Length: 339
Image 1 (cartoon, rainbow, N blue to C red):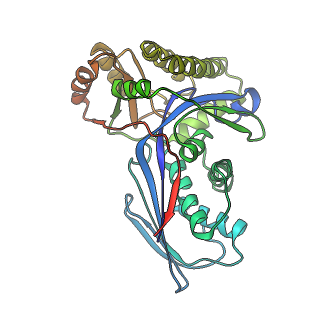
Image 2 (cartoon, rainbow, N blue to C red):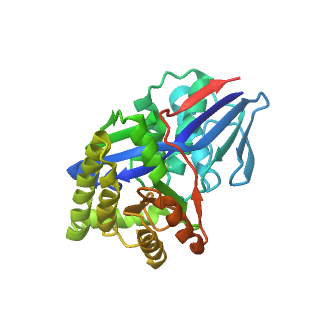
């Protein structure tokens, strides 16, 4: 039995600048941190010529004949796309196995669930087949499978966050070049940040690809408002990096608020009246800033709440029908093992 897990992430600053064509034209910068919520994968080899795909959280189960390439037909396409890539690049014959997966957050939550799941599954296959892939190799392959093989809209940060783990300042350039800069943040600063950041699930989800496609169109059309917002979000990533390294946590809220005001200008659908109402309620209860996680439109939103304001903010958000989620920051990325 081969198992793996990869952590989900909070995009603290710069979100959206990792999405082409902006990252190709201007270069992107993001600061993110992985948290104690995971995507899991288990592979159990079989010898009966069958492939069993089991998504336990989505409650989807399929039994297929083992073949060199599986049809991409809308049923667990991520699982199939990864298998197709593994066989094409690393195996001289079809494989027979059962693949079971589970993610701690629902699809459309804004925590990078799809990309993190791809990384976890790739990690399990690499462990099973003894494929010598480094961190950059796995993250890049995960990106290629999602964006090129499966034509799924999105950016580059999630695959690298899930693979590397920890707090990272990431830079994105043309030709898919990515540089991951791990940040050595003092433990007490991270503990205080985790204490003060309230992670709240809005009990809604969204299709991130729709928002990302609008964002892409805005860049191609040279929409001034959208382009200015992206450049400001790059600036926000640098501001967040400096504040964390210096331990200037009192600035985190205003840096988040700075980014949120510009993020809403990236594309239609990033925010909506319901999200705006949640945001204003959190600010009135003592939060100094926050942002939606991921592309926007729903899912998780988080707020910086200095002092003991987190408890007042959580109480104020109860009326919206969502739920605050407990978590810790994690230092470790993808891990895989055999039993």
